Image 1 (tube, rainbow, N blue to C red):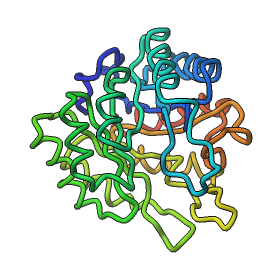
Image 2 (image 1 turned 135 degrees about the vertical axis):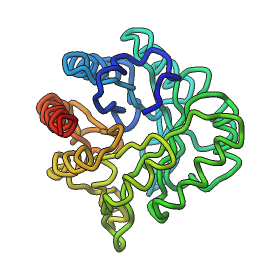
Image 3 (image 1 turned 30 degrees about the vertical axis):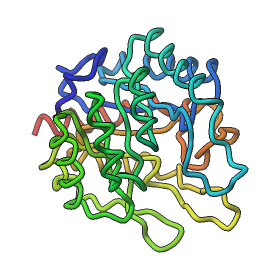
Image 4 (image 1 turned 180 degrees about the vertical axis):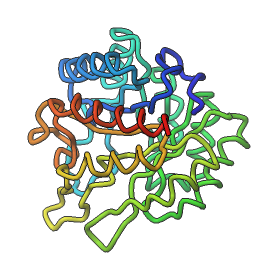
Length: 272
């Protein structure tokens, strides 16, 4: 687990998994600070290294009237305020080369969305900022194919990259996680399991993505047992009214118990 390059990250000596967590999208300053405060408290108590996650804009939407953001600069400034207020690193996803340059001024980790992970220009632009790059595995890609995405970052002069599995498309409206891919991708670098996006049910006829949040703990437990370095969990204090991906987010009230159980599993595995 190589996260020493991420500023402000704490508890790296805990021999624990790390966590990328927060809302799908930045909806406003109050909500971002409220979520961050709660997650910081929980992860501090459990000795979990933590990176706050929030999208400053959502470019991949099913419908033209779907929520895309509150404004790029406004959302990025909120991410910076979260980082400064709670002394934690932040991650956001980017969609264009220009986004890479812009977002790098505000956050510590740049995330490449799964649908864009084969876009060489975008991956290289992110790598050349010098920030840590989080590469989401494409829903259409094998675990083995991610070695080439990692190599693009390294060949651009940046050794700070990690892979995040977010499930593989299974039919038209469901995702599955092939846990055989975790040890495979760990050969190439730090590997994360995106628990909540792996439970999406995309391509609904309504144009609004569905999900299976009832399976969050099941998928997370399996990921920890398989040896992932980190977990990615989107969480919100009111998922039913979240402006993006509410159908598969974890309610913030359930996060502490979930993480406590996962820490216990990790400790048990470490003792074997």
